Image (cartoon, rainbow, N blue to C red; front, side, top):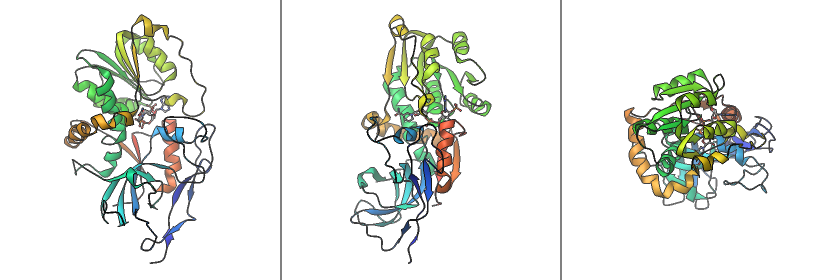
Length: 344
Ligand SMILES: NC(=O)c1ccc[n+]([C@@H]2O[C@H](COP(=O)([O-])OP(=O)(O)OC[C@H]3O[C@@H](n4cnc5c(N)ncnc54)[C@H](OP(=O)(O)O)[C@@H]3O)[C@@H](O)[C@H]2O)c1
């Protein structure tokens, strides 16, 4: 069989603000691959099916010398992230042709992983759930919610929790875990459609933070015992100002400052002392060992039965991957952003 074009999404240039499709990320069709004869050197040839688009990808688009909690992308190479693929050929006894694999995949139609330890044959406890869900609510974002809630919320029925980006994959699962534990949930999101979804999944109070002042809502509906922070900045400050005694703050993300914005200095840190607050930095990978098995036992079942709801926003084709990444950074995604690269 003759070599075929292998479309890839390349990290082309370090951005200063938002990642611009065609500049920061470029869809490249100059590479070819021979599916039957490409040397594998003990590895596998994977056909990419679905890729997750997550906010943290922007943090990987940085100069390599800048430290962070996750390694940087390298200019000139394909981006990579969690995804599901199908093994086309294998020279590794852990995989066989036809296996579906989960793990870190290149943004390429086909690829041969350099580090095979980042892939595993996918375990789908609920086979009725599409593969895409296993990179969303039943994958890394869902794990973030579950692990963080278990490790840090110390939730008690009747308490009040405030969740930001509450319609996204992380926030929406937090809302549902909190309702399951009997809390009053205040949820914020950036469009009226997202606010509607927050109400559908049980939020007691849901509002559009672009048209309603967050501090006013918290002053009326709080004080809050738990704040799940996905955005940072003035929202974090408003949450701190409206905490109850011994409230827990879970710092999960700070998307208001991912795209070159200046770091926002929180002015009311004294409240940490006054209200005896606990502030916890959540990093999903750090909790994987401890909660992974429990997560896969509990969450896919609830998603498959409909007890827990999830929504997806699908982009078709790797050539639109740059746009998908930008949409998530700008909040234009309507739900968990997935790129469907190929059908099974
Ligand atoms: N710590 C960890 O291990 C870990 C793991 C996974 C995710 N996270 C973090 O969890 C958060 C949510 O992730 P996700 O995957 O669920 O994302 P997501 O909801 O699918 O997408 C990001 C959302 O952030 C909101 N947003 C964008 N720009 C914003 C701004 N300037 N101010 C406020 N909100 C803005 C938008 O929602 P609205 O329309 O509602 O504004 C956007 O849809 C992110 O901060 C992410 O980095 C952390």
